[in-house]
Length: 373
Image (cartoon, rainbow, N blue to C red; front, side, top):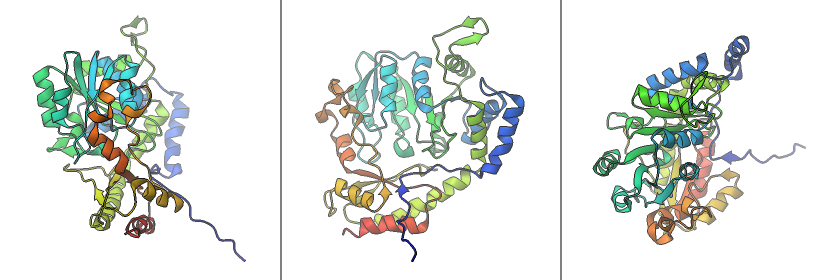
């Protein structure tokens, strides 16, 4: 008699990994050169390859996206107050606190869940020096309006573009907007290097300053120009990134197919709102739905139904950053200041989406959601 087994759990994401045997030659080269870090050949190759693929002028690789955010603020010499979103992963605001900068939380647009430009302008004070928007779920912010606001008030703009790898809007890469854009190459992202991140910038001088800051501030063997950190990406991570980049277009196509299937069915379900991007080229990094009051179950009840069926969807982003203890005392974190963000946080579920997710698994997820009606 054969023992029945429960199906394996379905997680909100899984990293895309190439065949292991394709990575071995890269490792053999590293072993032969004994060059493990400090801007080795794979590091240099990946920077150029990403510039070419993403259509950006300069890119500086980092060990992870959070170090890149912290360093981006240092590179722009940001102080005082920075307007940002409460609806993001905590690293966005944490990078400000690590730099001794006061986050000012501003509410989000109900359609895009990105920073609402109208609310940004209302949050500016004499202490404001920059805006840090997030391209949430990889959906581009209103970059034109944010640029106009920043120009009118003399503010820097640093985009947290952790979700926005490969996204194009207005005929070009979304990463070319703002003074800097910061990417994450964490294992959960569309493009990953195990762990990693990057800063996109527009000129060689800024790139040089960023490179100094991520290497303890060293300019040469005996000269330290700034209080830098150790943010460098290793050769192993860079080599893996080069291999990953070869398959990225196929990865994006598989994500698109899953996104399309979800939309075909869920768009017509009463009480389920599927967020959509207006970008010319999305990356399908996430598939968020909002569980609205006219759906038969509450958001948390539907979340539990999925969990009980072995489907580990996530409530990205709940709770709001502004609800965590280190931010609650900030006046802008008051619930009354953030009604749209709070409503989204209480309704959102991100459904599983990754290239190896099968059609059968996608239909199982859809069936649970539709079956409650």
